[in-house]
Length: 380
Image 1 (cartoon, rainbow, N blue to C red):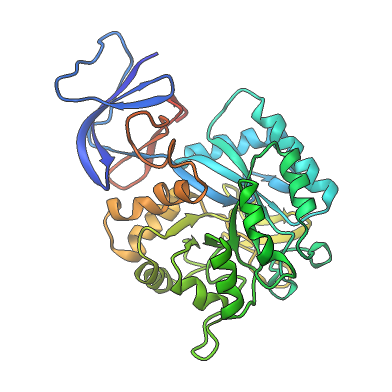
Image 2: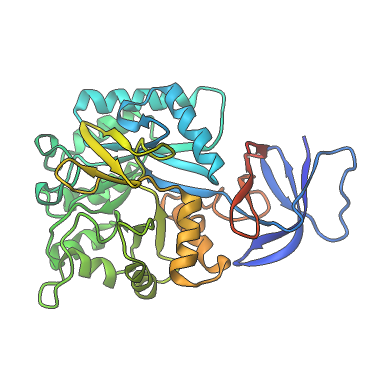
């Protein structure tokens, strides 16, 4: 079925243009001025609104009462619906370090969800946060379950997931992991470094071997010192992507401005790192095996260590605009183009171009999400 969105300002090649969009077969076509609209087709009037690519969240542990490490296939539908309402049209489910049995169960439930009728946002794949992480900067990771590099285990996971593990966070100082990075990439998995106290040289070795991103930059890692730049120095100096949790808690607005100035607008990826409390009031929740207390929207372990967030990507967008003073067209790549390129789906998602997936978000004058289309179907 053909559908049209008319009268909106469409985000094309980092600027807004008055265009008409046709959606057919879940794909986008940008109409030329001489092309006519089929009058019998559904027409959506976007007058006064901006039409932008759907947001992509590559790092989230849950929302609306669902923790990814305990999520059934049906539970994933709840997150998909919630995410879509906030402008997130694609996401990766982040599996926190867990037992082999539970990790395999998570993979199996993901596969079951893939065979269900689509509702809400696209669940594109799995992000493994661990288990090849350093105890010193474990954050909410259960220390007893952390381990050194184990390619046979990771290959077993990827085979079980039928190639759907797209992203993994590792610590460069973990024994054997740097030498395994090329093999991990051959499995189709993008490698990020994080939860790390690695020194500068070790971190650069990981980057040169193929690490492409830094997980929740500045958080759960050894910070920069003028004499010992450490992992943070290597991350900032290199051209790898940097995840950023833009909730105003994990990163001060000045830190976000600094990160953007150092890395550039094309190398920062806005994530939520949200937990099951996202979309819900303060209270007691879970993050994997951990108990989490949320007060004032701030999620922390009982020992006071911050444990994920309650952030949504629409709020991250508005925060970024407020924190930086930059224009919408400058900030949008952090939620669209950059994550799509990071996890290698930019051929289908992350921008509005002919032939790409019809994942679209309509924003009002206050940058609030008013309408959302996923694969050409209106979900909000």
